[in-house]
Image 1 (cartoon, rainbow, N blue to C red):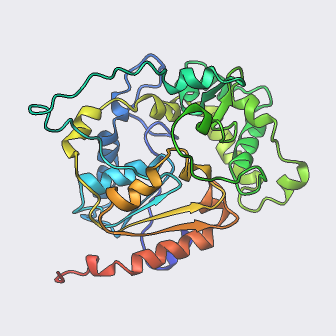
Image 2: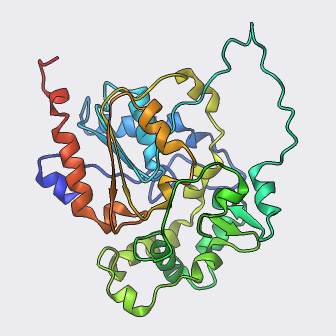
Image 3: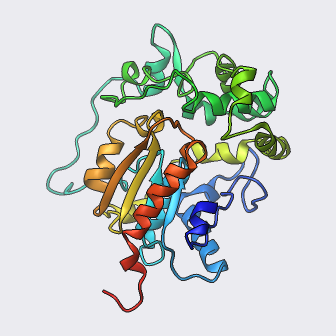
Length: 332
C-alpha cells in the first residue's frame, strides 16, 4: 500500500464481509448465508467506492478470495472498475446457461463415477479437500481453538503456504480427479482424519526461521492473533459455504468476459495458481478479452504481496501506468 500511495494512488484495503469489525452477516453456522453471495460482495465493494466519493477507480486488485470478487466487480461494473489485477487465484469465467436445448436436449448424466470427495476418501491414503473441510461444522472450532494455540497455528499456516517452506513446488494438474488433486500438499488435500490445525502443526517453522522472517514478524502476526481471538473464523469460512448461493443470478452474465485490461500476479511457489485445473489457461484465453500477462514472482508463495511487496508493487505500477489512457477525461 505505501508504495502505491507514494506513486499517487489512493489505496483502500477493506476487511471483506465476515472479517474484522464488518457487520451485516450471520455468524451462526446454521444461519443465513445469503449475504455472502458473490454479487452482494460486489455491492460491498461498490458501496465502499461511493462512500469515498469516487465514481470510478484506476483498478481493483484482489488476492485469494478477493480475486473472484475483483473479477466480478469488473464483470458487473466495468464503468467503475476500469482495470483488474488478480492475485494467487485465477478467474475461470462466468457460469454458463445450457444452450440450444430446444433443438438438442441435454442428455442426462449417465456416469456412475463418484464425486471428488468420495474419490479422495477412497484413496489408499484417504484424503479430503480443504474447501470441504472449511465448509464443515467443526472447522471453526479447530481453527479458533487449535491444540497448539492460535499463535502457533497461524504461524505454521502462513509458513507452510509461503515460499519459505521447501515443500512448495507447484505444477499444473491435468484434471480434477482424485489421483491428480492428491499430488498437492496436505494443506490443500488433507488427511481424512485430521483438521487443519493438526495438518500444519507438522510444518511449524523453527525458532530460527521465525526470527529471520521479515515479511511477517511476530509483532505483526500478533495483530492477526488478537483479531481472530475476538472474532473466530466462521465469517471467513462462510465464503466457502456460500459458493452455490446466488449462482442463478450470476448466470445473468453468462458469456460475458472481462473486457477491461487485466493482469495476474502470484508467487512462483504458490499452489493457488494450479489448484483449479485449467483455470489459469481459461483466464488468459477465454475469460479476459484484454489480458496483459502473468507474472510469477520467484521466492514467494501464497502471500505474494507480503512476501515480495516491492516486486508485486512494481508489476502493479507497470500495469496501471500502461492503462492510464483509460482514466484521462476527454480521451476515447
